Length: 245
Image (cartoon, rainbow, N blue to C red):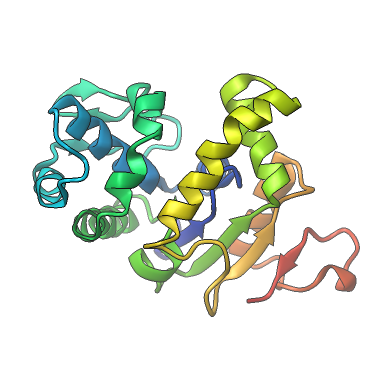
């Protein structure tokens, strides 16, 4: 457990690597982990299962308030359930991925899930000494007072290659093309209600385009543990591209 409570808020677009990196950082720090994107996916799954029209904003918002969500915070066990039903794999299915933005752009839904996210963050600060929370607006809205706020980003080319490899097992031209609409469209839709492409004041930007997974984890840990002062690459040739806000 941390000697003093710690919240690490991490934002980023699709394919930036924020989820896998955040889990690894939480594991190394011995704190909780919160995948806020999974909460929106869980609600989308719940609404689809109930036959709700996702364009009916009032009905979806009511479903959000009543959602019997069992949200994991163990980075090594991300089993997600709604009403006792395990939906860990189901929320990653194409039908959910293709429609989750309709839920995530509902302002009343965002207000409810942000409330739940703040509760989880507070509980984890007490229970395990801290949490790494990642998503779209964690650094600016959910946890603007976090001890560390980081925007993990990457070039569109790098993000598409990563997501294509994750979904299709490779990143040739055809596989990337099959992924492009999902990544680009999702970012465009979500950016209408959340700013996650550029860092807000006080948020450190970490460009992961040319970094390995291990290098990104090391860079985030160095920032959190005070081993790196945000700077431009010209100051140190072996320091990852971490820019001051």
